[in-house]
Image 1 (tube, rainbow, N blue to C red):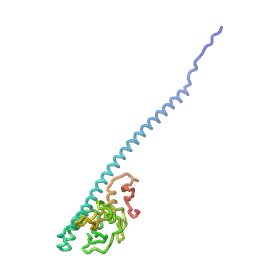
Image 2 (image 1 turned 90 degrees about the vertical axis):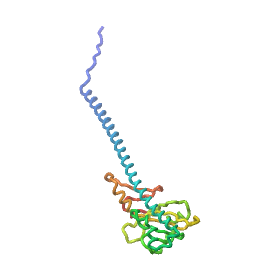
Image 3 (image 1 turned 60 degrees about the vertical axis):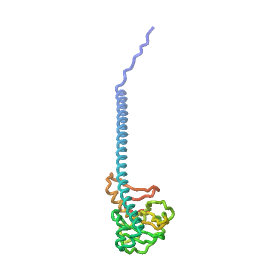
Image 4 (image 1 turned 180 degrees about the vertical axis):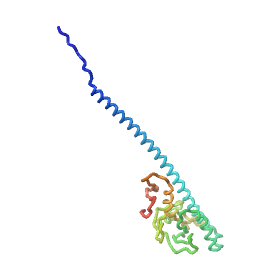
Length: 228
């Protein structure tokens, strides 16, 4: 009776090379993917840190300037409520009323409005031009809410022969001796302030810095003429 012999065929060298090459390619792809993921995570962390630092710098500068405008308004209100101020010369009254407003950067106008919205004092002149702002949001908010505090308006465009026509307003209520509504103190700031501020921030190429308020209203970092 003959015996069957089973022989194992030797593996082909070509198959071993193909298998080895395939495994090598897979390992390379895995290593490259891991490196790319790590690089992306590092880049994202760096961008987050950079964005946070920029936001903190902008926030600090904006808050400082808002405080300067607020101090100017409080100084104007305090001068308005002084009974002895009416006894001095008009130029001295004007100096006392608007003394603190000189420190506010990119200042437009600082005005004192009476209870009807008419201008009764103007930082730019001893004899204010007859104007009325009773229809403006920065006036009406204080007629409706005695506790409104410092109000910051939306950007608006003024009519003047000047380059920087876009402004925003800060306003505070003026109360009478018995707490009644006696008018509004308002200061306007040129929006060129934000251009100057954002231009001092170092950011990457093809990047931009924009500002939005709590209601989502967009304040452009440049070309303020595009605001609405």
